[in-house]
Image (cartoon, rainbow, N blue to C red; front, side):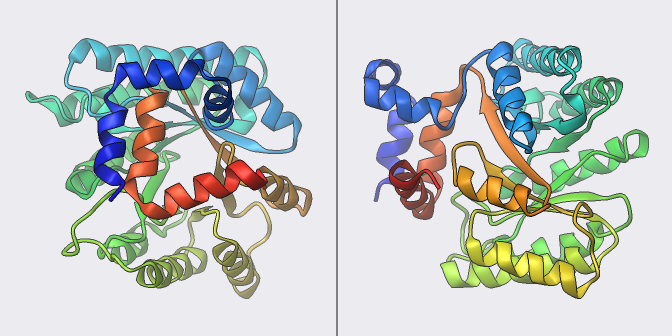
Length: 309
């Protein structure tokens, strides 16, 4: 019931202005999106790394239908990678890229444009001594994104993939990508998808996540467990032990501002933990869409405001 109102609010500049000026709201926003500029992103990265964590930076924006905007997004990634290098942070920080933000959805040759732009970012990341992970979006882009991933990995085999466990195809995709050198982030999935392509029931999604996790942890690749669910974290640890995986042969990933105490606890226990840090001027739409995508996100968001754990 909240989805459509939240999506409408995501497009409202007046509400955005209100949210960013109210003291409580601005505090909430800064707790989940550290800022709009490269300097903000680099500062947040430094703080997290000093706390023993790793980082992946996402310059916010998606569904780009303007070539100039896509080029600006590429420039922003090159700039932040330069900033990370200058501050000596790139060893512990990478970037996450939505292909729709770099031209995938452009009406004329969008896939080719996105591939070319992703190559530029991958080269900048390699020059900085770090990596890129391609974010996954709604199911209509899955084949295109995996196709672009295959092309990128010919020259940049270190490029990471993302799979969404709630998609019915995810387990098969995990098997395809669980090879040596393959970095795969596994998340539950947050887009509003039809039942024909995605599990709808929370328990079904959880079971699908575990099935995918078993495939990745048993495989030869590098699993990235993106979940705030304590049960999934525990299961991942048990599977690592079962398959003789040493700490550092996989990692946990959580969102900036969500369960920071748990992030630090895992890191202090010797686990590699990477924090997904979104930044940029498009933060408002990102925040509202994340709440709209699934009711569980709203509950998690509200609980974290109270506990911040």
